Length: 378
Image 1 (cartoon, one colour):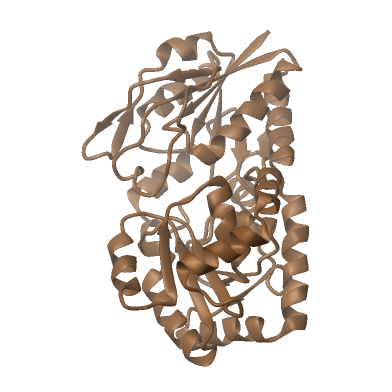
Image 2 (spheres, rainbow, N blue to C red):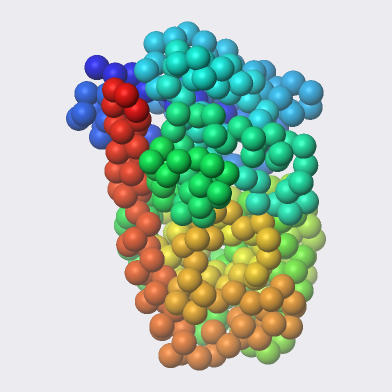
C-alpha cells in the first residue's frame, strides 16, 4: 500500500469533508492518506474556525511561528520519511518545503505543491517573496492547481501540463443545499421578526471574513445609496475578522443593517435563505459557491486580487461584475433587484454553476492526480 502525506498549517472546518472523502476514495485504490496539521496563527484565527475534532487519519503537529509569523516550522520529519508522496501548501514561509524540494531534486521523495500559483494581491505582486515563489514552481514533481487560471500560470512558468492536476477547489455544496432545504417558512418568519425585517423587504447578504480586501467601507457606502432608492432594502453581514469593529460601528443606529457574526452550517444557511443577492465588492473566493448553492446572484467589482475561484464567475450568467465605482455598483444592485427577468436568469445560472463545481468532482480530481503521480516512472 502506498502512503500519501498532506501537510497543512491548520485545517479550516470547511475543509474537513474534503479530507474525509479523499481518505475514503484513496483507500479504495489501496492508498493510505495521512494529514499532518497544526494550530492556526493569531492572524489566521481571526474569523476562521479550525477543525473542532481530531481526524482519524490525522496527525497533530506543533506549529512554531517565527519572526512575527513570517516563518513556520512544523516538525513532521517522521511522517515525511514514511510517505511515498508528500503534498504541501505552496508557501515560502514553510521551512519544510525547502527540505522537501531538495529531497525531490535528489530523487529521494516525491513532492507535490497545492496552491494558487501566485499571490493575486497587487500590492505584493513584485515582492521578493513572489519572485522566489515564481522560481520554485518548477521544482515539485507534481502540482495540484486550485483552478484553471492557476494551471495557465504554471504552464507560462515552464511547468509541464502533464504534471498539473486542476482540482477545481470546492466546498460541500450538496450538504449546504440540504441545510438550505431544512429551513422552514416558520424559521424564516422567526428570523425576520428577530431582525426587525418586514416580509416585503429585499435583502443583500455579505458573508465572509471581515478584512480590508473585502472593501467593507465601499459596501457600506453603496448600501446606504441602495437603501435610498429601495426603501425596504436590508443588509445582512455574516462574518468575523480584523475589521469587525468597523462593521459594528456602521451597524449602530442603522436598523436596516444586521451583523450576526460568524455562522456555519444550518445557521449560515438561514441567512442565505433570507437574501435575494450576495454583495461582495471586494475580493471573491471560495464563498462564491455558497451563493451558487442557493441560486443567489453574486454582485462584485472588477478589481485585482480575487481568489482563484473567480474563475467560476460568469459575468451576466451567474452574477454581475462592474467597475469599482460606487455609483456603478449601486446601479447594478438596484437593477438586479428591480428586474425580475434579469434576476431569474442570474439565479438559474448560479444554480447551474453549483452543479459543476462540486466537492465530489474535487475529490475525484485530487485522487486521480495522486494516483498518476504515484505511478512508477512519473
